[in-house]
Structures are given as structure tokens and as C-alpha cells.
Length: 284
Image (cartoon, rainbow, N blue to C red):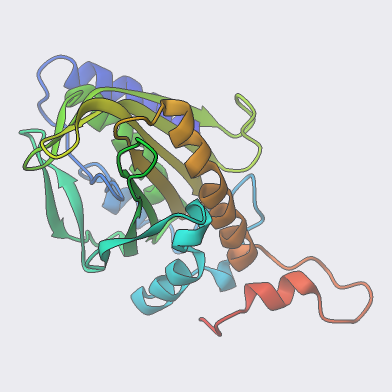
């Protein structure tokens, strides 16, 4: 559905590039839908079909509790980022809130919008060693009520970059020179998600100096978005950041597909491995 994202990007360019009026915001961990899109998405009673995965509506959460359970099954553990990765404090975000980019290009925590069933971010770190500073990492999974609403989340990332190429994460931490590259299914090697989005830029902080490389990668499969990010430090290249994010991002996408994909017909009459994986945790 990234063709739809591209169309919305064109709208965002026209609006945000001119006067910024009418542009709404999402969040740096799980960007929310543009104003008015919740009503559009609400017209669909269940997630839309997805091209990359045959989503089983019976396995897609319809409640906040079910969505939270799915998220915890999918979210990466620190070891996914490497044997030297550890939890940061706080390790998990408040599941009742997410980050929203204001008109002043400052990120703030706000209550989840109605179109989002659940969203959770985990924070990790590669401690400083061998002349390198600490590498700050995160992973986030967001479950929307519909695939259309999740599609808008990706569109919002693009809109945010256009209107705020410089963003204040929190006091003393700034992102600059942001650039986003979206790809629909079938574009540039994307054969694993309905939409993908890669954001790169520079990260500067009072504690770590800079500018250092910054990377955000997000994919959408049906009504769910999965994202990972890395904020660099001394001694880390952009390639290093991509390398650290590759495995956890792939693992989360793979686990998500197992959880929500329709079971293949069992021609042998025996329980399938994929079926047992999907029903793990007894959700829904």
C-alpha cells in the first residue's frame, strides 16, 4: 500500500512544504495517523488483506489486551542486537502512551489515539568499549485496528521529516538532516513487507557530542508496524548501525508473520509447525 503512502507524501509536500498548516504528527516510536484518518480506517471492521502475508482475521487482535500479548511475543530481546547488548533504563515505555511530534518539532509523550490498540517500545544499549561510545537502540511494535490506519503511520513518518528536518527528541538530544526512503512491496528488494521505510540522519547529544549517524527502519505487515532504531556515538558508522539493526528487525517480522498468517491447509492430517507457532500464548 506504499503507493497510497506516496500519494499522501505528495500531499504532505504540498502542505508542509508551503506553510506547515494542517500537518499533524505522530511519534518517534510509533507514529500516529494524520488528522481525520481514524474515521476513514474505522470504516473497515477488520484488517485489510495484505499482499505479503495472507493475514488470518481470526488471529489479528481486536482488543488492547490481545494486541499487547502479540507485541510481547514479537518484540526483540536485547540478545537480538548482539551478545554485548543490554537493557537500558527504563527498558519499556509506558504502554498507554506514545511520542508525538508537535508543531514546534519537539517530541512529547501523549495518550494512544483510538485507532491504536497497543504500542510498546523497548530500549537497549551497546556499552562503550574499545574506543567506541555507547550505541543507543530501540525496537517498537504497534498494532492498529486496521491495515489502512497502519499505512497512515508510515505516511506520517514522511510528513514529519518534511516539516521537521530537525527534531528535538528530549532536552539535549537532537536529530538533524533527516531523509526518508519508502519502498512498496516489490520495490528495491522489498519482498518481505507491505511497506518499508528507512530514515537516516544525524544525532547530536549533550552527553555524546556529535553529529553521529542515526537510523530508523520501519515495516508494515497488515495492521501492524515494526520498527528499530539506532543512535550512534563515537566510533560507530552508519553501516555499523544498519548491521546491528538487521537481525532484530528480521526476527520481529518473521515472528509477526508466524503469529498472524493464515495456516496452510494440512494435507497430512497432522498438526503443522506453523499452526502451533501461531497459536502460542493462547491469544484471542
